[in-house]
Amino acid sequence: MLTDIATGWTECAPLLVREQTVLITALAELRKLLPFPLLGFDTDNDSVFMNESVHEYCLRDNIELTRCRPYRKNDQAFVEQKNGAIVRKIVGYRGFEGLRATRELAKLYSSMRLFVNFFQPSFKLKEKHRDGAKVIKRYHRPATLFQRLLDDPRTPEDTCLWLKAMYLTLEDFLSGLRIAWRGGEVKPTARSKPAAKRERRRPDPLLAVTAELEEWFEAEPWRTSRELLERLQVKCPGVYPDGLIRTVQRRMKIWRSTQANALVFGPFADAARQTESIEVGQ
Figure 1 (cartoon, one colour):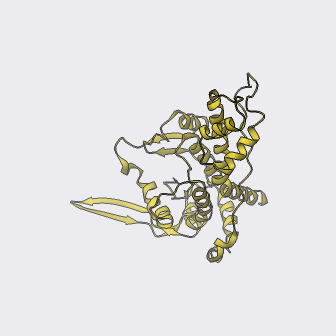
Figure 2 (cartoon, one colour):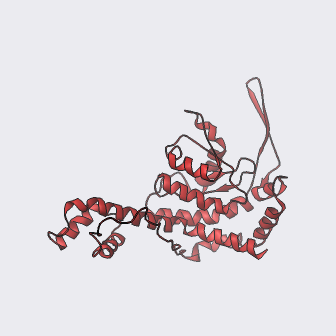
Figure 3 (cartoon, helix red, strand yellow):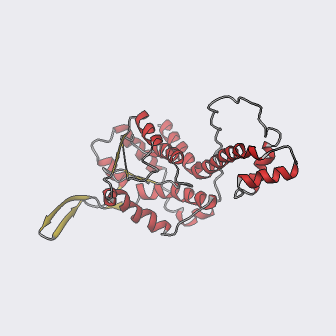
């Protein structure tokens, strides 16, 4: 979850696994949906954030990376507040696992972001002071995150026009919520495979059976690389030794990553393309 401290603008994305490369991919997709540039990234002390990959990503894109104090979970009060008021209120407290659950969460978040950011009003803390043991808080008048972003003097004029144009396209959004579940599944977006880091130095020992291995994986994605190799050894005795286990593991890692990205980020890629089309139309 990404939450802007100034306006409260919130974007969510499910993570199939808590892994740094998946996090970077999710962050890159969410940045396409933000109506403003990402200048800073403040996280907790989780290892999925505190690693070299995230540090290099922020350094490359001129994003200031900061973290909370050790053993101080309440440093992330802005995110935890939205996590309870938005995600937990809609999704619940149950933990979901697997590709199917991730796909459904991605579809839910792609629609939920429109309702939360454009239609749901919220309070914003104006001031807070302590009188003895009593803490007194005062709030601004409730406003939607969309309206709060328009009222911010730091928001550029072209961004305001773009947001208003998007808001006009959402007139049928609220009326369609009751029947939105009938819309069917969104097909995953086709993604090109990442380029190899280096050229192969020896002939591919699995070249003749790669397509067949991938078919086995797609039919039974819960199988391990050892099980696929043993099945291949039974079919072709004496051809594929046990030493190929690392090669099979690398292939399955690529297939799992491709499948997970397509399932998770399909709806978000569609939302990003819709955003770009509105901007071009202006």
